[in-house]
Image 1 (cartoon, rainbow, N blue to C red):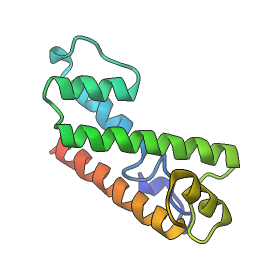
Image 2: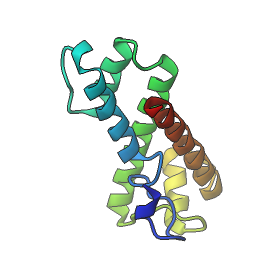
Image 3: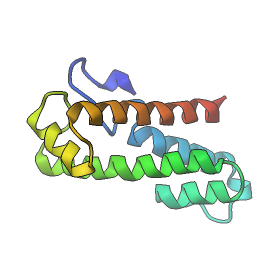
Image 4: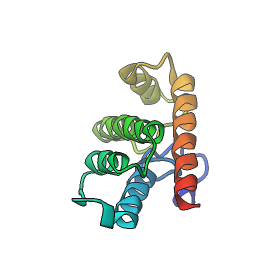
Length: 130
């Protein structure tokens, strides 16, 4: 997914590896893979994640990480849309506002936290596909 991003453009919470698109893709993949075990195939990501966890095909820990990150990333995506920004850049005034909005102490802490969270999502995705 990083191939969609130009170097130096900041974090794209939707398209970068470990972002919204990866969570949605992993969720859809798991629904299709285990569709015989599921009563319903959900269109919304959070319901789908819950149903996959309920049939034991996603650990409680991985479910929590994907769910919490998905909610956070969607909140950030909405904020960025309203601020007319597409990416999160270090040392950017809008990123400092975003950091305060989500409860981070500053833009550097926010960027580090997002990188860590996106790495967690990528780790889960890699384990799903292996």
